[in-house]
Image (tube, rainbow, N blue to C red):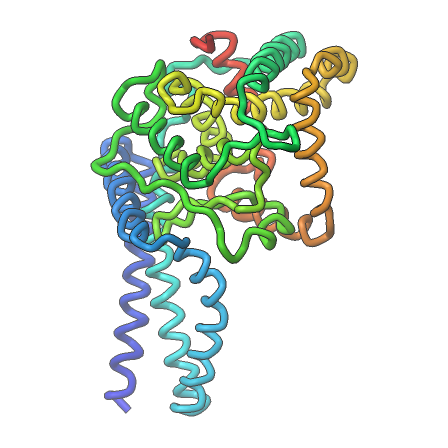
Length: 373
């Protein structure tokens, strides 16, 4: 019996050790600045290394993990229960689950969790925090509409007249190039801290694109492989912004509102240095959407006045994007949103999925007190 118990206790002990290490590392990163900065640097380097290792494969490894994880665990459970009997098999299964859970927690904390202890993005950019008025929100929305209207004219378009940025690989490389410019200090704001390695460019889905659309998800960052993944079902007008958002997570920007803001800022700060300057249209489009939605809720009359000044090209892209979203408006998306909301809240963002829209506060501070030109 002792020979059977040793491997069980070993795997369970390792799992508990990993879990304890994860808790200690997360606590140090969040509570002590002196340790936090070093742990975040280590985390960015480690996640970037993972990303480059898995970038050898042209497809997202994370997709296969997500698809096969549950069947693999089920098969392992069946094998253990059949080979060792009910009681002994259950012990071995429990031991294995503890090990997997502990290792999963440790890798998450190292690759992403520690980044939640970073100073807020407005502090890092020296942007003041304040309560903003409806008038200021309307002014921002009007400014963003002007930028979106102008950028819509420069954006490349397909035969159907809709925004078309071409191949995903080229878009992903442009986003990666934008972040390299930011890392090198070639942008107005240094929005991301430097790491020993730059993350690999984001990948697009091969298996889960439609599934993600039904769940209301356009992309994700998978810290266990260091991969930023974007749904191939995302409309072009939002695709560069989504790529830049997931790339921000890969660069250590953990909160959703900060990732949205960094994506908008990085792409526009570097747009003149990119091969396709029209590429920035996507982020002006997204920024206008966020601000416009906030103004719609705050003051419909002001929103309508601005809404009526949308250019025909912008109207066309907005209608196409809304039509894309409407086709997935099902209870499945509501369930997916609820799961995503729970995950985001579990990471210390009490607003849940609403935190994406909190980028408007950051944009207001940037517009009123920063260099938004």
